Every structure is written in structure tokens, then in C-alpha cells.
Length: 99
Image (tube, rainbow, N blue to C red; front, side, top):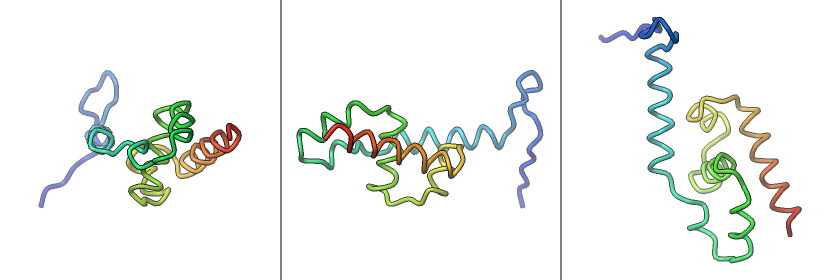
């Protein structure tokens, strides 16, 4: 059995092994993720999507393309479940407003 300890691996910055694993998981997911624009045929909606931040587009993609729950998205991005919900709702509101 291999045990991982959350001890600091860099005493100056207090970065733990757990922190590094979380960052690698998020990076791997985002590199291999699909672009939400690839799933939309409406040219006007694609233009509106371009006004969103990459973070907002990533959350929309994970929610609607990958069908991930807020809790799963939060774990991948190392943010709170509430932050995922708030970001997604803000992005959707922005898209609706520009219609």
C-alpha cells in the first residue's frame, strides 16, 4: 500500500503533493477538453460565446458537453461548488442578455 502525505514538498511556498496532483488533474482535463464552440451550429451564439472568459467556457463545456456535476467540476478546477454554479449562471445570463 502506498500512502501519500500532505506534507510540504517545498518549504518556501508550502506546496504539497496533494496540491500538485490537483493542478495536474485540472491541467490534463483542460488540455484534453473539447471546445464548446465545436458543438454549436448557430453562428450568432458562437459569436456571443467568444465574449465569455475561458474559465466560463470551460465550466459550460464541463456542465453541458461532459455532463459533469458541479461537485465534479469544482474538484477538477480546485474551486468551490458554489463558485462553479455562480460562474455558470453568470455566463448564461450574459449569453441571454446579448440575445
